[in-house]
Image (cartoon, rainbow, N blue to C red; front, top):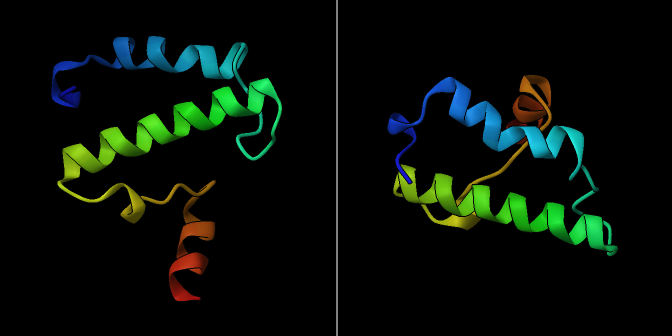
Length: 73
């Protein structure tokens, strides 16, 4: 998938299910958590492919401060 070909509306439409229905904790072992983890893994794989990186080089944080602190430590 090439993100340059997706409009903001299309991206929002792909994200909406994770804001409304599929918002399980990806670290939980229940079904909703496994579904969320699959979505995170898919996003990581997609970004790694787009950035010509390895999936294990992609990290998600909740915001800039967390990312800054994580990078420092």
